[in-house]
Structures are given as C-alpha cells and as structure tokens.
Image (cartoon, rainbow, N blue to C red; front, top):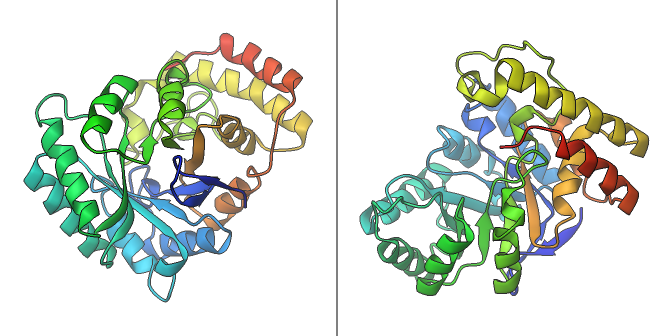
Length: 303
C-alpha cells in the first residue's frame, strides 16, 4: 500500500480507504457479519482509513463491532456530523458517534456538508475546533464544500482535509476546489470514485436496482442516461484491459493521479472487492493513456 500526507503537516494515510456507506445499507441491505468481515479484511490488506458518518444508517454501529479485538488500534477512523450543524448538534453528533463506534475518540471529524445558511458556519467550525482541543478528534475536516465555502470555514478553524465527490464522470472539483486545496495544503479524501457503480463494468442497460438501494431513485441509473454512462464505461474498460487492470482499478488510480488527492474512499460489500481495490494503489498512467481517457470522457455524460 502506498501512503500520502493528509494536508501539509497531517498524518500519513493509505491512498485507498474504505468508504462505509454501503455497509450501513445505503446501497442495499447487507448481512452485518459479512460487513464485519469486509472491514477487517480491508484493514488486513492495508486499507486502514475508514470513513463513515452520522447519516450512514447503521454504518457506525457495524464499524464499532468490526473494530473490536484490536482492529481499532490498526486504523485511521473518520466520521462526520450530518444535518444539524448547530453548536449543540455538532457536539451531540460526536457523542453519539463515539458511542456507536465504541471508541473514546476518532482520528478525523468532518462537517458532512455546507449548512445552506441554516447554521452559522462560525458556530459549526467553532465547535469542531473545541472538540479537537478536547481530544475527541485528532484532526478536523469538511466534506462536499466548494472552494469559497472552504475559504470561509478555514478562516474560522483551519482544517486538514476536504472530502469531495470525484470520479471520471464528475470532475467539477478540478477547476477551483483542488487548486484551492493545493494552495492551502489541505488533503483530499475523494469519495464516490466509481460513480456509485457506473464505473465498475458490472451493469448492463436496463438493470433495475432494488427499492432499498439509493440508486433506484437516482436519474443517472435510469433509462437512456444510464445507458449512455454505461456505454462510456465500456470504452474506458477497453483502456483498462490494454493496461492489464480492471475498470475499477483504473477509475481509482485515475483519481490518485491528482497530487492533491491524499486518499480515495471506495465502498465494498465483500473481501474480494477490497482486494481488487488494493491493486489500484500502484497503477500509473502514460501521457498517451490519459489522452485516450480524456477523449472518451469528452463524449460522455457528466454530472
């Protein structure tokens, strides 16, 4: 496993982390014992950064069970406050997360999204800083903030990390957000690198997701738009095959080509998926390969 620094003076973290939204049931119900085996397999494989959130359904409690028997000491544990970003909301969420996870502190605590003006950012970030001072979290960060929002938040409480959505079909952060993070020395934990399945090569047009899977109600996974995404993915899969890797591995490695990306968070439902993800950690690209990929993406739908 390769490692990068999270922010200018932050900790060393693996370039591949485990995004824990799937094990909370957000993409279909999972057996908890299987999820525990997946988490432990990830840590055993070197995927030691685990990212969850208050809003990830049962994810925190499942992680809490998985991290017993010494596994907590072997990982970098991150979670987020989701929804209520008031001073009381942030603190209450932290206490609830610590209880669900069965730990006394976490390594990284993040604000899940911008509060849309409903909660004063001064309150939110001020409380985040206090939790850090109290030792409930080693580091603080933000998630799904754009450059302007990060600038405002950073002026109140400097933070080490940003967690943006980033993948081949969603490149919006490349224009302003990633350059901002590079200037400020903020590390990025890129989430949704596989486009929630669009970049796996595992689906065919017309596939119907079960009702308990979030994708069953999302436009990119319906009808003609779904087919267009899968068509582009099929072309990308040919590039991956020429490199001797899977499309999944290529999609992860493509995100890691960005120096400002410290870690790519990838969800997994089983041990085999984790092992496939690990294979992306040392993949690099030639200029010709990147040009070929860009040519495909120029004609692909984007979100």
